[in-house]
Image (cartoon, rainbow, N blue to C red; front, side):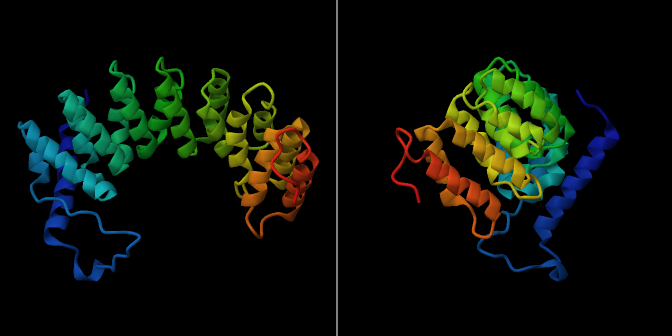
Length: 290
């Protein structure tokens, strides 16, 4: 599928550098204390590259497992693992290689994963979509955008969630189309990515799309930084929820009220407080207004 002696040689050289670094240890000048919050990745075995290229499936599987434990530190090995996928592996090793590329989180793995995102095996498609959300890059975005129309509903859901996590702002229109096709996870991703009128467009879905689906996105909008979403847009959204005048609207607004960060916009907070009071008498509203 992918050829190129020079590319393979470069990948091997990069991988050899990684192995030598782990085998020989960090130079004294580069050593840094390791905190409890950021543990040092597990060291790679010195023979990991040799094992990845072995004809013994057990050796390959063991090497992939070792690479996964080193996660992002093994990024230079991504082209080697991608090459294995492109050459063809057993189903078990294919799954392991896809998962390993996801853990490495290197964009170099995206092209190989994009191929498997269209595989006939639905489990491999799902795994490839999840991995692509971590490897990122234009190839990953294009692949996940296409997967919003996958025949498998779980694959569509994973694609919608992945696009939100990748901050792929140019796919908001595709996510709205997916939401109209009842891909509920698209709402939260729209909330993570929308700007201006698109955020209000999401709020306008109240009443035509299940409340909990729309508010999974509105919650994302309301708690984005002011530099991404203006106070005016947030106040408009609060107003749209308030207008519903239902118990579930009151419960949502109370939840937002309770989570509103200290020191954030007082204008928005006042709007939320007033909306809670206005909907407190609605059937099914929680408790008394604060």
